[in-house]
Image (cartoon, rainbow, N blue to C red):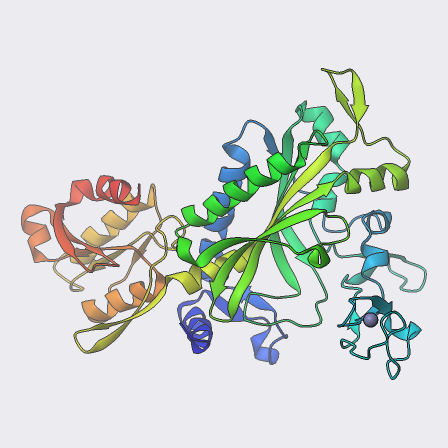
Length: 434
Ligand SMILES: [Zn+2]
């Protein structure tokens, strides 16, 4: 797939109601996108699948949902204020990093004597805002740049109430904001985005074991989403790529039309975050280990994935253009568990009682799956619209239905059609989905 395909996907997303440009009637807002009716359904299914896989199905992971606004000291403790604050330049030769206003960029690097600077980059990625009605005297805080800190500052609350023992995890899904200098590639890099984060608390010293464990779990999760495994890989970070809090990190990457890019980071954060909050808050952030009768600050392995990136990956991976009888067929081969509509229902004609039978079938399907009723246009055009929306199954009601109670069930990917009894539609869908 070439770069042009991202444009094709953007246009399909608009045409079928997956994604619209934000504030489009006012000319749009750069790199900001709105999820339409199909988009929000698919996004919700991705999030539900994550929540089930990481939280609900596990004994030793609990969830939470923290506020987006947090006490500003959080961001001093986390290192986001000092580490993301200044415009920085790097010496490309020796990798030394300087504040852009502290060096003369017309002169060579003090350390290595070569003159090869990167462009100055603004590192204060946080969106500042003011609490209270008076802008001058109000308290300054930030829109959270990650959901992780909401988990760390609640470590004692959650551990105390859930009575979890190490190792255990706390997971959260929610919006985060980063004032990125460079954005782009549709949903890939945006300033407002949604994260799926797990902080897994462990005995210090077991970092490597749990880092390996979560790398494998998370890579498998993307495969279970139906993404082509050959386009997924785990890539270890080089030393100079590591964030300030991390000693080892792996990225789950997908091969996009614009190259291999990160979907998720799995990082060994050590005890950095709880140490910092222990110090900055003056409140002990400790776990009492009943086996050794010791109080310790646990270490953390983090899994941090982007919802919007995962959404884009599912679209890119599912997008196909095929030749069918001299006609181009565009089809989204989405996994049935994330497709916005599971089954579309079509009466062949708008008369002879067929629409009424179709409506009844739609109601039946909706007791378990999402269904869509469409009686507009030729049957071929209705199939094409559902192919573009990624709907895996279509049921057509024709005159034979009124005689013997059977319908045709069409498979989106193979376009094969079989006749089945109306009574068996739900069970047939169920067996095909599993
Ligand atoms: Zn240098």
